[in-house]
Picture (tube, rainbow, N blue to C red):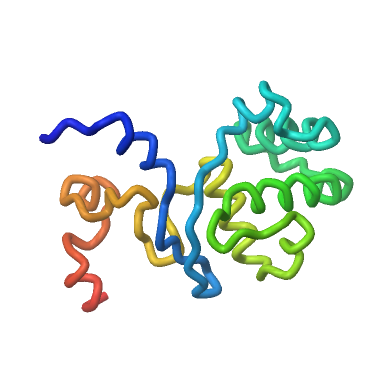
Length: 147
């Protein structure tokens, strides 16, 4: 096993070639929500929506209301705009993205998902046999052609 450099480790936060349900391929960086909250990068108006969403996800809370969903839109638009780094998008442009892509990007940003739409791990672990075996995936990409 080769040791990594600090610079390479810092660059590992960028995930290129992430395929979304629409077939669109983007580059993402998973936002550090705790740090964003602590440093004021998360607008105050979105803090309650972020906390509510994180609590609901952690608890598997099924008691989501219409009001909660409406309040989440601004948070999701902000989150998606911070997660997708190529192509760069604004929160206002998020409404133009396919809904299924938005949902996947929010799941990636909130760490509910670590694989893209074509079952590739964001950090490339899907290329490791031990990861593929543990996740119950085909033993190689060549095997996927036969699925």
